[in-house]
Length: 435
Image 1 (cartoon, rainbow, N blue to C red):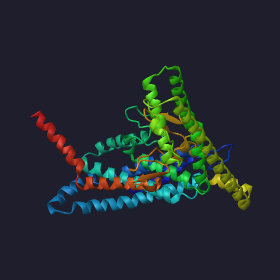
Image 2: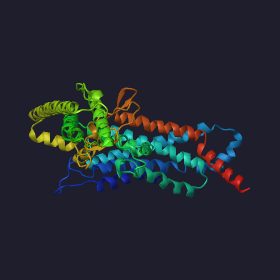
Image 3: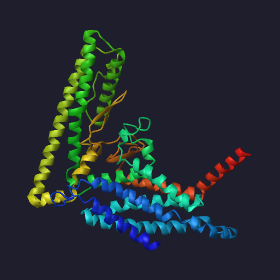
Image 4: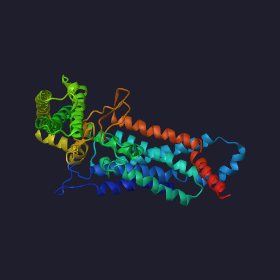
């Protein structure tokens, strides 16, 4: 049993690394590996699977011993601590070998520590789930029936297989990751490892800040400002033709007003002085003309912002080419930057770049460059940072803390034997009803 568990990680690493190693014209480069995002998510799933399988029988197989020793009043937390320490050490070893082998196969450079931290944390969380079900259930068969029921939701709702925007309408939230996604530990692990790989690799570190500004300029000039202009022009037409549809006028003015407020708060642009007049009671042709003029000013502002960012990027690239040489710079990018992952975290290939609600327009273009505004850590998927009481925290560290908070919570449910008590309560309830 121990030998199988020791070999499990290297074997899975070899299988996953070999299958996802995409070559173009018989030449492999990290940059062109289109399977790399799949590898990242499956690595998280593998870590969770290994953590569950190694821990699921740890307590149930000691059930008879525990019953005999119950008369000795031995310490239950001490027993659990011995199991947890052993499992954490074993999971640390498993994830270490997994990361080592896959990094060698797929030529992943400079990310070993964060990969191992995320995958070990995921495996530790799975260890705690396994110990809880092992403590709560008496049958090994029941435990292994329950394991797929735990894994499948984590597969579907981890953010890789199904976009959170494409979930059932009752589940999804367009602005933030939905609550049902936040419950899944794979969502936190996959986001942490993806954001870290894109944002913190040695090549992107030179360009990220300017790409963020360039992305901001493109979004506002190509998507937001044109949408707002159309809404203002529709309102203008309704007023000029005296063909007012009150619901449409009210909604469009509310969206325009809210977007102007967001621009002032988040993009450091001068406020629109007539914003208080953007409502169905005060609106007029003159105010709409002023609003369209303000959009023209914003367009010029973001054009200048984007141009400056592109110039800085070109300057940095030229400086690197002078220092490294043209061929070495190309190799440098090939070794650290993955095109497919960049497409996913920037939503380059996504159809919807902007989403309209009843009150605002939600940006879907370039989520990896959008600074979240919620002060309690809620954000879009692939957010580069999280806000916690106005403190900005890098996503990889924030997500790791969330995972370990889950580990602590499961520890207390284990110490209190919460699952067994819950099952006993429902069992007694059924017996009482039958009587």
